[in-house]
Image: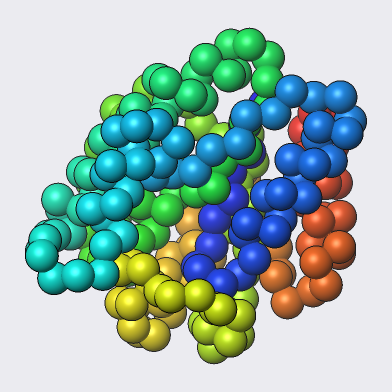
Length: 201
């Protein structure tokens, strides 16, 4: 079973990932938790380049998209596929949907092109459920309590396109579940847990 979490920054993904992993472990499941990009030596190197806030490296949207894809291909082969083959539950902080929304809908690359390249990198590995935590941009901004990375510094118009992109993708993909992050933490977790329980039954 493979679950991924997505949404604009500031919606509480990390908290909900931790709660789901804790519940799965307490329920007797072996869990592999990862982040995309990251969780492999190559992925972490690429992550450093992609999220750096200095001006030393200018990254075109297409280059940006391909770097994310390279990190994901490594993550699939090195972490996700082996974990699934061992019968573990994989929980990922972001996956392909993030590219579709960030570089496609918000970055204005052709969404179909992003999905086509993405299909090569994931090689048939797709989440059983994608939990998109949703908040208006203004509310998400209020929750940001750390220094922002390069993607988070793109501005409010970009972040609004992100939110619209997530909602648009959810409208056409039944595996994508939009969950209001405005609700209390435990209520959000209960919704996620209910979806996971149904899928794992």
